[in-house]
Image (cartoon, rainbow, N blue to C red):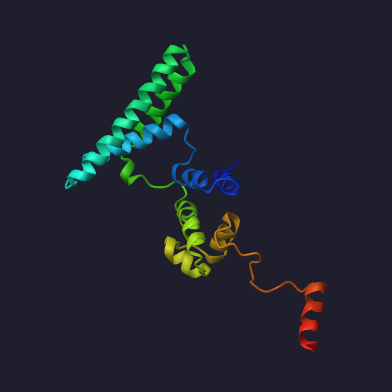
Length: 181
């Protein structure tokens, strides 16, 4: 199954995981997620002009991730679980290949942004047109493809693409009853 199909299928179950899949190209395991957060914090500490509060918060967060990683590693060693130790090593190797996590480019940038904005638009109950949404996510391709992507991910929660009610016998009867009143 291709990545866009995987993202679409996962978006119906877990928007956050689907967004991560679109951004990272894969859904992270628990170990990969903890390592990613740890490495992100380490890289953030190298940034110039960090406030004292920000530095303290990052250091506390990293200390928590270090503790979690130590617990996972010690548990794997105690349980004599080489698969878990190997999983940790593979996660380190994978994230090393990713390079600078602050400047990592999403694998599927449009889908990643759509899935990022989906809960925000739902909570704010903001109604956007396809054109406004395309501008929001910086989409530059064809609008037909964009509309299909938005519908697949159910970002705008539209029941019908055209926005017009279906011309069904029930609908015609309803329209007729509205006229006679």
